[in-house]
Length: 186
Image (cartoon, rainbow, N blue to C red; front, side):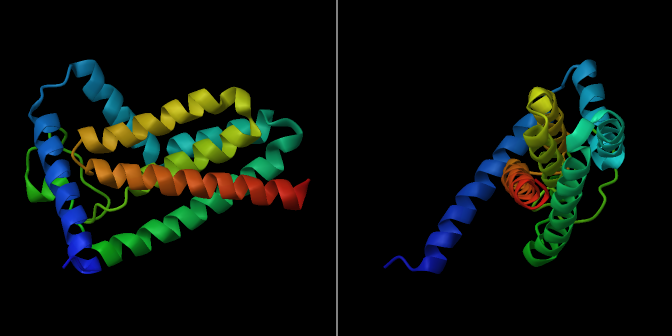
């Protein structure tokens, strides 16, 4: 008889096997130098400076929408940070580079836990929130967010499921913050 806990173990087990297999393949691959540099820049941008720069651009050139856009984005990011800090402690999943030291990047992770990706949550919270206020910038914002997410996998900081969860959570927070700001501030 399949119980809920058995089904959960089967699903989690499948996810982990897939994650570990993909991580070994990705980090066994000798990526071209341009890609390694791009991924390092994307991860460093995801540390925060890219989002501050985007906030400054919106603050200066954002027009009438700048205050609601910045408030919504700040709310989405704040909730995202609180959520990923809690989830990481609860889940306790180790980072790929801690389990198998196979990474081709020698970055120090910000903490010891992998699930979910905080960089990806923040990236998608910013991209979806600002992209909702400024649709003309949406493709560029999503490209930046996807670059940050890909960098976290390629640099061995996260498994694929960590960044997928981060993208879903960040997108939901960014979209919700936009909807809330639209209702309250317009």
